Image (tube, rainbow, N blue to C red; front, side):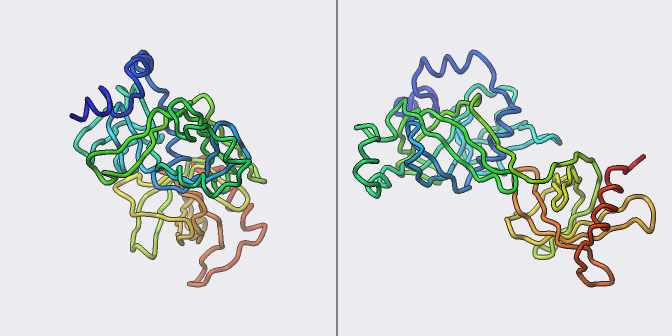
Length: 301
């Protein structure tokens, strides 16, 4: 019944489109970037049919991998570099190896009712059949935190009403992203420096301690790759984190406190608040940051 309702695949807009997508594998590097900046559950903005003066709100509620819906970021397994390895679809009933990925789509709510909040002139710019007519372009915009803004153009595959799952009987829209249009604008004022230093991260609110890796640093922020060993609890923007850094010598140990300013599937960016010394939080002096940065850059040398 599902096949007759949605086609041979939940995600295919047509048999021809599905066959065209199936001729080559999806670029997993670009999929990694897409899910990093357009994760499930994150509030986004969009504009229809390239009309940048019509900006509305939405969010991704699921991905659709080879026709199987993935409802949670935790259902995507990745390797140490953050590349997807397995998609667990249909509420974890299906395991799809990423090497077999042929189609990748995004499920968003049908927000057609938002059109009524527009003035007459802007409503007139939208297709007579609505912004979510099959084949229309929907440009998604994601606030990438300290990195600026990321965008991707998508094509409306179809409007759907799912028969089961967490969004059953709700009006949804299936979008096919054009991965060639995926762009991330880095607006950080300070350049990043790549590093690779093992550290211990502590989340006081979650009573969690785990091994992680510092992967880059700027003057006021560090990026941490999480979950080196075991699962990581939910981390949200604004959460406090303590990072214990040992650079090989007893006197070169730093206990750094920061606040999460951006979270992705595998990493988080931490704004540096200061060092913990003798049980007190001490703000960084300029020389302190330079010493820490120099130590991280020379780790293992």
